View: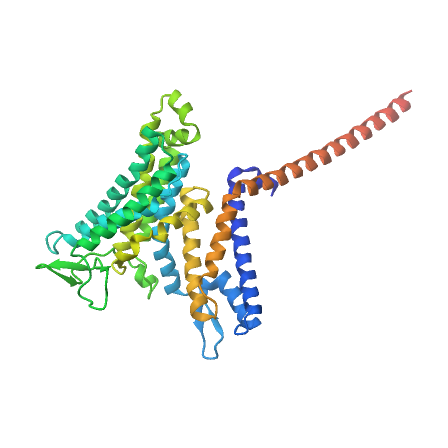
Length: 425
């Protein structure tokens, strides 16, 4: 254990694990307190809520007697993978900026711009004009480019005007919210087929045929057999694309010259410039790449074919963009770690739904868990220092013990030599 704690990567992993466990325990305590103070929830109900918090992803509902049942739930796991897809991308967006010393709080705006470009391209190209896979690819690339261009704005402000990127990102977020609302409000993309809906944009499965949008004539992300592996869920190959992006970002940051330059700028912009690294270019490039990742997350979400964009709500900002921040914090900005932290956050979403559907609790309890984890993740450095201090104390104790053993051995050796010398005399 002592050797394991000597590694900084091990301490980082343990700090994240401790944050998760404490968050889950706090959630369990909240469930217990609410259960004990609410007459409609018995101690048995509180125990069911606690179990759902820890293993709710494996809940299969209730049996005929009303007892909770457990087992492999393909629908819940598939939906977890589906919800994790955009979280991975926005988490990578924030993590990449963190690695270069920037705080990309602009992921919501970049996500919105990616949404707008993706839907406009996917829904504006007439069905049959191009193969479906080409339309999908154009819409996906359009989302990446739109997010990248929007992300480069705070990067330019930071690089050339020394404007704090957080302030610039907040401004661009709200500009994006109003711009996207105006664009969709002025378009002909509103869902007029399902007459009960107002302010919804067509799903990408609706295609333009002779000037009319027809269901089933559009594009959607391929399933690649995942729908058979997880029947009843929304999962598609988007999760595989997101994982490939995470691996690509890891390689970029860890194995390339560009990645080294980006990290050098993040560590000390002035020292990097002195070493011949073009710091302004790298700042703009970092924010553009971060924006492109957020835009890609929007593209993967809305190209799934079973999601709808409700434009009038975007006078506020999308939560998925902000949720990339706790995903990156929990992963300590490690691109591979982002995959697992996004899956964990998506799992909590599913657990929240299970609490709402199967108990008298509601899904907002999982928000408490996420909040605690986020706060602890922000203090992860302090947790790593505590772990390092524990390692140091154990090392000192081991050295002290070794010293005492060595001293004892020296004393025995000296005594033996003295006896030997006496015999010789």
